[in-house]
Image 1 (tube, rainbow, N blue to C red):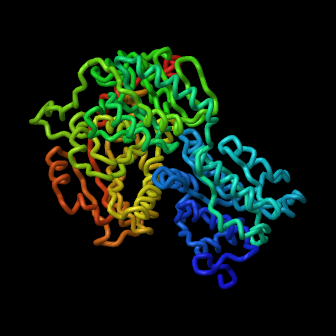
Image 2: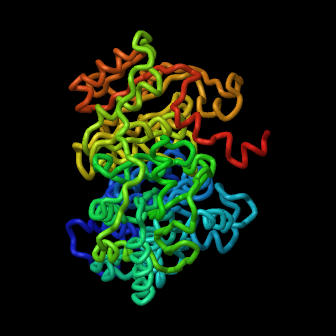
Image 3: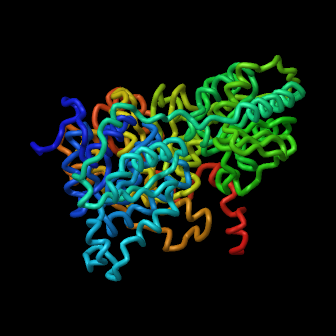
Length: 576
């Protein structure tokens, strides 16, 4: 390590090694930790991380590392992961696909064989044995907005800068190959003294002005407009503008399921979650009766729209997106929402809003059976909101918890992380590690809280050991209900393929290496147990990793899950 330049204490010199350049750029973009696994084609590059001020996470497998990098990026704005060629990168692809589908910026760096080995088509391990060294990059190219093969030192610095900027601005993964013989090659270091320009792509001023005038015209004419916020408002960095528009306009504001947490739920004009037929009746009536619907970052996928059950007209809709604005049926390519929203806020006229259907903040429902101690979804999720606190980060797995959280009222500044579009079971546990690490780097006082099912947890439970290794203190709730409940409600309610082998989940924590006094586990089987847990001050402080086995009936699910259109989508109708 002595020969490596420590850029934290030494003035940058010209030239610098390729690895130094790449990792310095990552650090400049706010990345403090890098996920991944070591492999023989990336080991030399990994030697440079510490000298560039980066922590190596070291995950249990590449799939988990990809989920963790995805979670880290959702909190810090961007992340990086390093794998080895072939076997390592292919194990990551499922996670990368989720990041691509859900607009999460992840920098994937692959250590590859030397350029000479590739040129000569050598029969190397981790290859397909056919001399083709491009096949994996071609596969990755479908899941990345930029593929940069770092093979010519004359171009490498500019390639890196371009790829990282594309990753951040387009909020999707990029793929970089780093051959073993390029790691120590020299590139221009002077460039590192100028940080990357990460300002959004500017709109054409004349076109933007026209769009703003059109939107303002429709706003002034509207009598009953509403705002619907979705996940791409989060991914593309327009939450400040979104909040300002909601507060200044006073318009009723709703979120789609993927946008949960994007709007301050303590605002008086926040109306709840709109998910078509799966919405609460008052919410559905208010949104669908609007004479103007402003959508911000909308993603109209099947689960996000309750089986495509939106009953809104495009003739009454204005859609704001990162790369275009659509006003009714007129689309304006290249006019991104950030600049448009800013001008609309600044020039917002007095709106002539007529009273629409009354919005009611739903009270916590009465206990349907106070004499029954059983924990049910209908009982639990509304009461969770009373225990959550300002600044919490809540992860919900693809499953019952994804839909149960719809009934939870968030305090201010609560972040909800889920994967409703890609929906890879096991995502949330891996992502929890990245989220908890990012939260620790930003603010050690934020709690990371995971809700996952027992079936989902079994897919990626190894990352609990990584959480222990890095002294992360999430609170992990495992919903123990004997299998894949979400799948049961789709098909095969009592089918054996939806069953799992039950584990002693709380015993895994010490098995993964946690020392006594540095963790705590719980079993909660009754409503009284939940009340006691939520009133336990030490539990709520989250001073160390805590794991809760929470038992629910095998055939119980949230109301949203039962009515969200799981069997209404074209795919499931086709199976009938």
